[in-house]
Image (tube, rainbow, N blue to C red; front, side, top):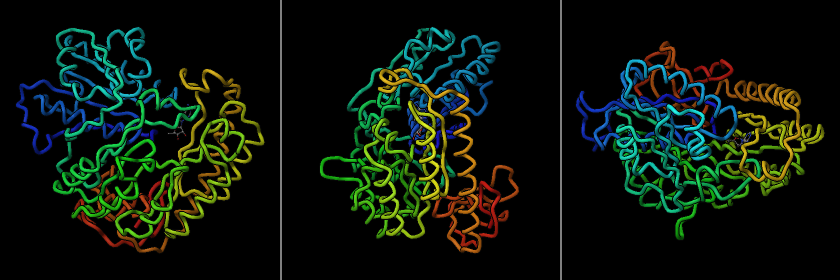
Length: 454
Ligand code: 5AD
């Protein structure tokens, strides 16, 4: 998952069943760090607070409550949150009653250590505490220091509607929470708890709400979406059911786990036109020794075979990945094998990281974080340089192709229209190319390196 991007989510307006809060209602400002699951959780929190009479604001200076939804996956992610919370603290000068709270994975990871490091944070709420988030915020506003980090094996937020945008085009639907894989490097099972599937009726209800609101695309979310199971419904069956929802034209999912890519899911991708030709398939390492030590459950060859099967079934497939360098004991040869696997697959895109010890994982307890920072840095550089070549080549290969681009809205700079190709590539179209939510047939003419031009 892309946990590189910091997403600011002002949640400007209320979703359909949320009563419109008046100007005197307490104001909440929210920021989201981390993966798409966190973005979806922020929408859930916004929905809960909206129903409880809070109003969302885009400016922290006018907020009574500032909530930061956080990520704990790497040390850097937590550092960024600390930096941002201390910046936001300056708003206390104008508003001594301002409540600053952190929610999500870092809250769960650090628990009461948060208050030790930053006593000005008066609310700490983990990923399974959002059902009562309004109550927790109310209590923090009375001056109480509130910490709720209990994990709940059953909590899937049934029947709670997340906030939706008035002009939304692509929306998240959480289909699974938690993770049972326990990869040795990863904090997620500890911060998000055990894996549980959201009932298919709930997944369908959320998808229909989005369709009614005018959304055209849904992204099904989970830590390992393709291990989804609810009674006798597996991920392939869920995908085919979601594809029946009228109004939703495109379906994506993230992230699948390589081991759980059943032939049934590959078949569904090949047969169901609404399922987009795009897969994010985290490789982590190209070395069998490292994969074993990470407890990933597949070998390099099994990963390559899966890529082959996916590309055969879905010829226009775009493939992205996560690569992690510098894990415990990684030798120059292990690293060379990662570069080699990347050359064999030629991913269209990748998120690349160097390993950081998270304190509570198996690796943290049993393995030595023995790769010097300088070596991690150098290896990461090599991986990034190689991927840049592959990304460029992948963009170049698309020049001249004509695609159906889903219009999302104006580009960031406002001088173009931003859209998304079936392969998930960002496409910059001429200004006025189409209304948000419309499909435009566009011929790719070039690339900025990050986006395609059409
Ligand atoms: N250090 C560095 N990167 C990590 N990831 C997960 N845990 C760690 C860690 N301790 C990366 C993996 C994963 C992505 C979401 O983050 O590549 O797929």
